[in-house]
Every structure is written in C-alpha cells, then in structure tokens.
Length: 142
Image (tube, rainbow, N blue to C red; front, top):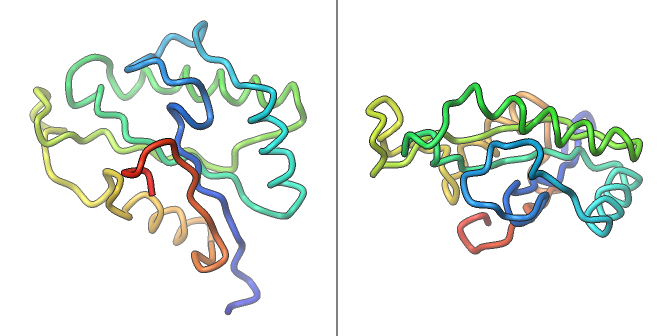
C-alpha cells in the first residue's frame, strides 16, 4: 500500500446523507439527521475523507439542470459547517440512458453501480480504495 494514499468513505446523497426527496433541488427541503452528522464526525475523527457520489438522473430526465445542484451542495455544506464538518468532494452522474435530454441520455461508466465516480475521486484525491468504503441506501449504490 502506498503510504501517501488516503482512505475515504464514499457516501450516496439521497436516502443516505440526506433524506430522500425524489429529484429535489430545493435547498429549503434539505436536512441532515443528527445521527448522520454524528456518523460523519466519527468517520472524520478516524481519518477518512468524506466523498459524496450521487446519481442525478433528474438532469437527463429534464427535471432540473446541472447548475441547480450547486444550491444543493451549498446547503449541505452550510448544514455541515454549523457542526464543524465538511465534505471533501462531491461527484455526480447526470446520465440516464432513458433520459429525454439528449446529451445526458447515454450509457456511461459513472452511473452507479458502475465505478466511474469512485475511480475519478480516487485518482483526483489520491485515495487507496482497498482502505475505503461505500455507504448507500440501495444495492446499486455499492
């Protein structure tokens, strides 16, 4: 193992980090449970990077645009900041083969359960995947 590589926990957004409200990009509806905050705190204390990896098929389905996700990330970051926490990186997949927005209606290697987002994060953040974990609320997340 390369001693310079870091360990991480990859976290699904909807239904794991925040309650699942399908296709929500309204920051006023975003909350994080106290138990989740405590879990994130424990992971940070153990030296894990916290990396969100999220399928965002609502983009391909035309429900919202990529730029709409910025307010979601900002709200999550603001909530966590009040608890002295932060997410190290956010990655998302805008693709869905059955989408109606042509540029996103494709088969890709980043849509979970494919490993694209995790492999990209591992490369960019210098993560040792053998020392890392994935947490999600459905089987396709892992």
